[in-house]
Structure formats: structure tokens, C-alpha cells
Length: 450
Image (tube, rainbow, N blue to C red; front, side, top):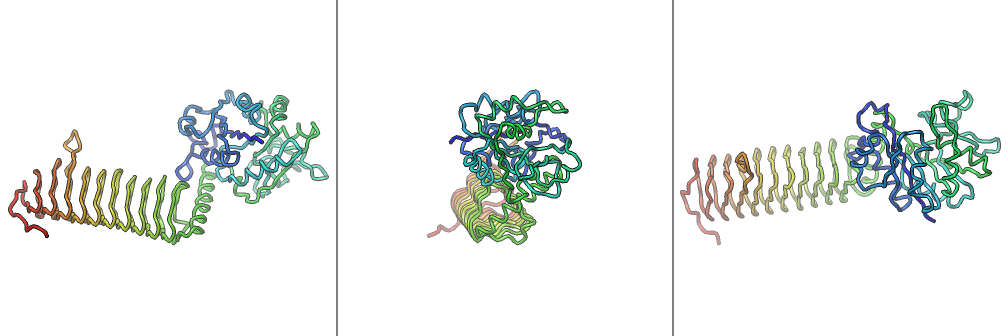
């Protein structure tokens, strides 16, 4: 049987005190709504419908093709919001799953269990409930003396007795769609001038249908975000969940409370993560690595047995057995071959360092292609920018670059060549040649290697 998902994301989120729509606030590097979209898609197997309203264009542009969109304008409550998806979904699904975009901790497994319960249930609605001492503004589940769900009462309309109820409504439902679309037309206007989706429970009971309530096993999944305090709480819980999964998968974390790993990161077994390490974006870490402490790695590919100490890396590629830091910076386009070493305060951008190359401290390499087994002395700089254009430097294998060498691009250094300390190299250097001075000049032809 077909199941469609509708995610409510139209509100501004005034309690966030922000010009940004609430559903776009990031949690571990991704918009809050992305987690709800991913969970719904995995639960039903199709692209969910996202009901948007406040700054609709901005929300659509940020989330892209992750969802199908309908706009709620004006915003007249949750029941009215679901109605906006009727034209897209009516007649195309047997059941409709409804969730909200501000609950990023809800898992696909929990949503799948809700859908499965409704598919096996003869009634009109299945819904999740949660038992908690802190109601967090949720509506209360009102049951009959025999335990049947009779209604959901919003906190603002609840009586003092109803406010004592600790079975709460986190607003996750699965409806029989054939009944849903007609029932939405019968939702009454609330005193606030809105149409509440929660009133469908009372309508279902009046229609003679039963409502199945399923308590959530992990109450933290239902933490909704309305303030920055909630945002921080949800991020901490999600980070703890991610770290736990990686430790169970064979990754060592010296202090999980000080380790920050975003959801799309991949880590190989036997890797050790030291405190204050941030693994972000689509980063992939190989096996047997040692990362941190104090490392920031964004959208990077790291091979096996690499060591990265107190360094910043962005869109870089490291092959196996690479040693970086401390205090190194690898920028976009940096590619370090196997066995490369980049020392403290070294910086690489848009450059390839061949296998076994050693780059000393306080050096900058930009727009360069460097061969294997090259020694780059401390303070070496590729002068690659002339004020208008970037220029390339090519360094052959087994070259020795003396300390404080300035390599003024465009420039080529042949295999086995050398520069003296403090040289300013402005012209190409042939193979097996030593150059020194400012500007550098050839003073010696080196002995040919076997």
C-alpha cells in the first residue's frame, strides 16, 4: 500500500528570535528540516511534501530537490497546512504520514513503526505519544475510562485537570487518506482563528473510528525546537547518538563529549579521535588514523594510517600514511601523496605533493605540482600571484629546496635540482643544477644520479 509523507514547515519560529526561518537553523552543519525530510523519505520510500510558508523561497532554495513543496499562505494552522498537500496527494496514496520539520531527532525506524501500525490498524488514525514530566507545550492525550483515545487538547485550552496529564502529543500521525481529505474540511475554527490538525482525533471518534496511540520508546526523539536552548539540546543529543554509533563501529574517541562529527562523515575502524576535533561535511577518514586533538576537517578525503595534529583542512585529499601538523592548513585542492609530511604552520592550496615529499614548517605552496621525495625547506614560498593571475610552479622529483627560498611562478625546477638557502628563483632550473642568490643563478652542475 502506498504511503505519502507531509512535513509541516511553514512557521516563522518567533521564539528563535531570528530573521532565519526556524526550519533552516543548522544542526551539525545541516538545516534542521533536512533531518525530518531524510527520516520521512526513509520511512515511506518516496519524496515527502514539505509545507512551507514563511520565507518560502529561501526555504525552497536552501533545501533544493530534497522535497516537493506546497505553500501555505495565509498560515491558518496545522490542519489548514495539511490541506495544502491535497491536490498533490489525493488518490495517490492509501495512507498519509504527517510530521513536523522541527523534530530532527525523530528516527526513520520510529516513523516506519507508526506507518506499519496504521497499515495493520482498522481505525482512521495512528499517532505517536510520549510520556514526560516536562510537557514542553505539547497537547494532552485525553482517554476514555476504558483507555481509548478520545481527543487531543492543546495546552492553551486545557483545564487544570487536563494539564496534569503526562501523555503528550508530539504531532506525528498516520491517517487513512480516503478519510483524511474529507475530515479536514470539517475541522472547526479555533478561538485563535486557526484550524488544528489535533481536532481530527475527535472527528475520527465521532465518525466511529478508533485512534491508535503508540508511545515512543525514546522520549528524546520527540524533542521539538522552539528556542535556541532547544536547538543546543537537540544538537548535543544528536552528536551523542552519532558518536555512540561510531564507537560501536570500531572508532576510538578519547573524549566523546568534546568530539564533533557531522552526519555524513565516514570513519574507518581503529581510527582514534582526540578531543576538540571537528569532522564536517562529506569527510571520509580511513582506517588506523590518528586525528587531533584540535583538528578541523571539512569535506576531505583521508587515507589509511594518517596523522593529523591540531590542523585545519578544507576540501583536501590525503593518501595513505600522511603526517600533517601541528598548525598546518590544507586548503581546497591540496592533494598529498602517500607518505607526505607537512610540518607546523605549513599551508597548501591547489597543489599536489608527490609520494614521500617533506614540507618543512612556515612554508606556503600554491598552484604547484611537486614530484616525489622532494624536500621543501622551512620558509619556502611559491610566489604564485602577480596581482591579476595565478601562475603554476612545477618541481620535479628528488629536488631539494633550501630554507627561505622564493619560487616566483611561472616556474619549473628539473629533477634532482637544488636551491640554496634564501634564493629567489625567477627562471627555470635544469635537472641536477644548484642555484643560489637573489635572483638565483646556476653555480654548479650536480653529479648525475645512477
